[in-house]
Amino acid sequence: MSDLFPAAPSIFPSDDGGEALMPQFLANLLNWIASQSAQPDPMQIDRREPTPSELAFFQQTGTPGYAAPDNRVVLNPSPPDGVNSDAVAQNEAFRVFLRERYKDQPAFLPPLAPQQRTSLPKSYQAADPFDQRATILARQYSGDPTGGQSTALQRQFIDNMRGRFVLSPPAPGPFGR
Image: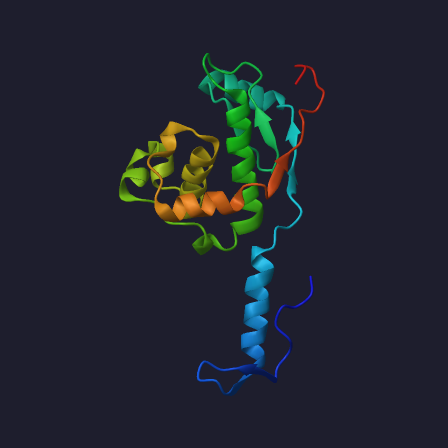
């Protein structure tokens, strides 16, 4: 992408009708801001079949899927009745996307509302604030009502993230996914 703002010193019209110089740092900042709004190629999020230990975990807990530590989406081949596996896949893919892009910059994720924090399962109450935020945002992204009422900042963040990742089709495996 070419710079929208030329390198300084550049002469620009000022508000009072005169001319003003744009310092280099301001030109660099404006170019960085413009580059952040450009839609990058979507990030590919992969799926994989569960390992034997993950299968045992799914059977014990009924968890419909998760964002695995290897940053792939793993779905329960026998999810509980009434679970929308496509929504679960989108939820977990969004969590992987957030982990890949924002784990080192958690302040970029919008904060949780107090009622969202208290609605998290007890196992998440003491979790890393990034994981808490990613959990709620992913639930909201996928339409899961347990994400709670979204704030204006959360809605804006989610809307800006749409189209920034794609979930690969299910890999062939023993469960026909």
